[in-house]
Length: 86
Image (tube, rainbow, N blue to C red; front, side):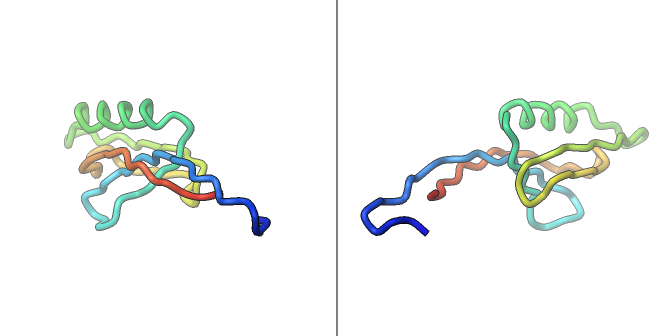
């Protein structure tokens, strides 16, 4: 609990959202380097082959610790900006 005279600090975080073909809501990954993960997932989508699916694993820091999915099941990727107070 914060002391009465202090205002909460507003910070920004940028999770990576991974949209899957078989799941309605996106998978939200909180990672250290969101740009690198975003670009990696973009390359995975670009190079995905339906004849030879590959298993992709991503590790994160938030509630979702690991995501393991076939590259052919990834429909899209995005970066979201969130503000939160500490």
